[in-house]
Length: 339
Image 1 (cartoon, one colour):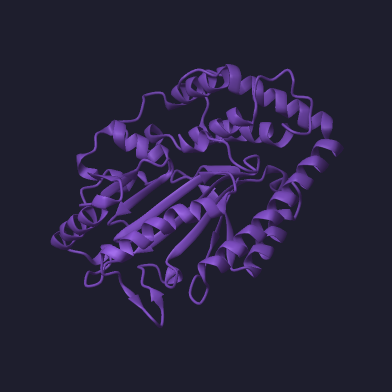
Image 2 (spheres, rainbow, N blue to C red; image 1 turned 180 degrees about the vertical axis):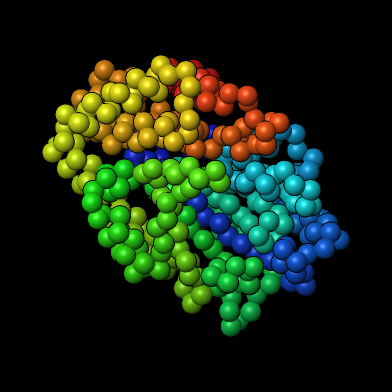
């Protein structure tokens, strides 16, 4: 999957996502669309994308394997993939690039890269956005810019989202609050990730822009890079301080966590993510030679535990013992085998 590839600063920035939203003039936004409108939009987007090298599928025609693949690559949510709301998906040959049709907007171009390479994620999405703009009558005004269903995205219609693993900052008293205030100065928001069942992803946060009106794409990219650089520097400092000042405690937690992940037969999401957090905290600042893990495995563990299609399914489709299935998946990743 795309997030298993090499990426800059993956020790802290798990992934960078750019979403560019576009709407077709003359149609209501998806929440207000009739079935006939939805079918028309699907047809128009499919026709426009014919020369873009994208494969079109209707989500109501996908089997569970295809849905799981789209879900686990972070393109769409479980509900979007499993309702009959006349939605669609365009898949690119480029890993991490796709288009969601009739979700929050008529067209949501999603571009994701591992690590902190904002420019690459943006360029991929922007190239597709320009092609749609050239082939369709897109909703746009000189006064406001691109019109979207979410008022905060009116203007560029672009949202940047960085998924951050910052256990060092989270474990340093007051550091999260300082970081949140710093992000707000750039019109960004730092928020923790919570699952629908209430599970908190300790140490994992999303940083996203909250305004686009009157700001150019280059302004957004520049601000993102500045905030990102601040976070990476602060996280590295916090990890080093914690591992230096509390080395016996961190080292003990590191190896306890490794043992659980390597040998446990049942693990819930919260426990697994907490263990992975300790690996991430100590990996670069402790002697970890006795643990058979590297950054590639740590990042793969993080993403696969966070995003498992079967965990989000209804009671009929979920494994009877999800904790056992999760533990087996984790053991295979650590051993370097296939999931």
